[in-house]
Length: 561
Image (cartoon, rainbow, N blue to C red; front, side, top):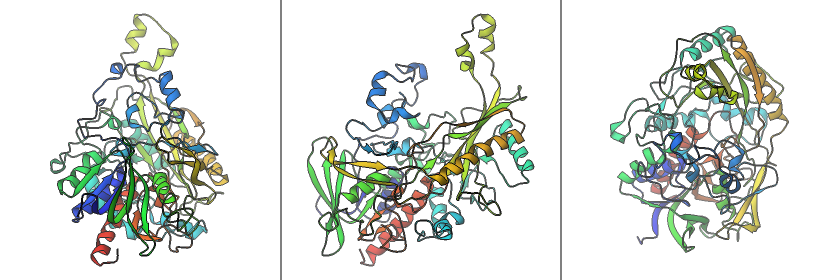
């Protein structure tokens, strides 16, 4: 085997890519992981991890230079000094918006596994059957039962803390001990459960922060610093760097190559199999080919599809996997940025421990059981209660000793919740290659034509009204609803464009995440999703990846790949 030949290639090093590398190497395959962005080493490269806000040059505020350089990132909270180096250079890597789409990318080893919100929820049985039941898009080729053992497996290794609630709408998992709700959250939870006769629930979020140390993984339990997205030297939250990459490296079977932009999958039309990938070195522009028996595309939803679109164009003009006409279509996200908040009276003698990097969760209750709305699917809420801090009166410009003394004491308790709703897979929501515009490396850029539609708009009315209703029922004062507006992509839960299905005429991937047009190519990141549910998707990517890797190795041994 020469230095450019491997058993398997993994493209991308984020959540799903890290899992693919771990699973394939642990099963004995020689693997190269190709990451288009920079190297980022665990602990060593977490340069902002321990800084206080006043140690940042601009106190974590945006500069005019940052605003000019990041026209997309500036649209929402990700643009800040703490994480600036982890987001993609937008001048080097532009894209086109036919309709507004906020695409937040992280080109570095670990990808967005270093930046994610870590909320980790299983889909339920209803989620996998919804498309078939409602006649929307195509049917998932798998059911909850197919993925349940893999949920168990990835939860066990990643470390998901949470409480078991016994709810069909949000299945329990293989959890570490949960974090605690604070005193206000506990009382609000009890009042909501009582008022709604046990049909609505509020409990601590299920989060990929470990609450028990794991010395075998060199990981220490969460320190409640809430600085996760700066990197965590304790390894307290799941990331490629803290969890899957060390496991893959420990096998001796992994080669990691950063600054490697995969431009296409190499395809043999005679065997109908991929033979490897073509790479452009991001620093030198050198073109290199890597050969392998199996290719896993985990470059994040849209970049995996970009690679497919740019591949096998001599056979299919629209790319490898395009024979169904569905490649690039069915873009999804979770629509959010709305909910309610209010003030909580009492509890002046109570506080909470540390800076908990987690909040509460309210699982879906609309279009469940006997509840039927004028839209399909549903939504859940994430939120928290806390006490206002010293900055609460800065805008008042008060002065004097009494003012200074008052700011040494915690302020009022407040509570808020934000809804996350399911977006349907519309064929007309699509991405495609614009070959008339290129990036820094002369590669065609993606164009986005995506919008939310009547179903989502109808759902959003309930997302605000129900939040207000719950808080008011719990005795919260001065409850205010909010809808801050939403554009697709803002949820940073992009999905679809290479969906799984039962029929090669209507889908890009089969039940094992194989590209119908080349069965030794697997796609297990967000691109593969056939519908979106309303829960955070990353845990499902982990489970799908572990399942697909197991199948790929078995098929290799059987001589089918």
